[in-house]
Length: 144
Image (cartoon, rainbow, N blue to C red; front, top):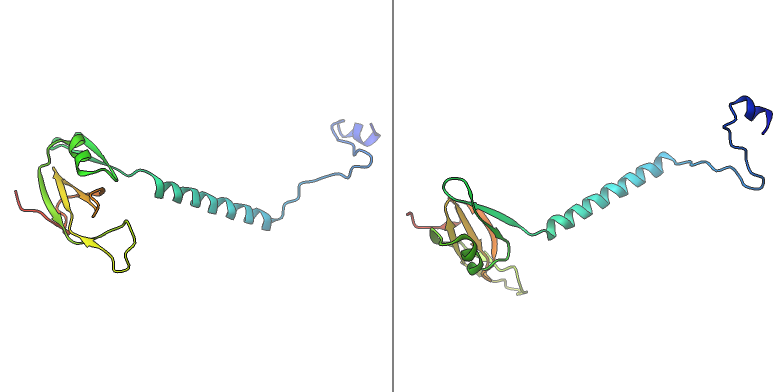
């Protein structure tokens, strides 16, 4: 050890012969670039998760307890098997089909099942695409 290293407490690393000393030098510009990439990657992963996640809705009974849970894509038969007998049935206003390609588009007026204060809405192919709270303006339901 050299005399200066001993005087500073002996904890100083001495440079090795033939190896240049390295220091991590990061410019503010590189830090900003790294943070921007990290933020964009987080947003991308979150967006993919949100888009691909299974959508579930909870339907409660009149007392407020959970009656059943409905998943996006279920058929009318699946909903009835999980939620029991519906309280009513209505018709939605025109809904555009989401599956398939048709340059003129395809629309239908699918049914919707009422369970308490909620209405299970189906798409043109008969699959659940949303559960909304009643009353719903775009849903024709005869008054009970």
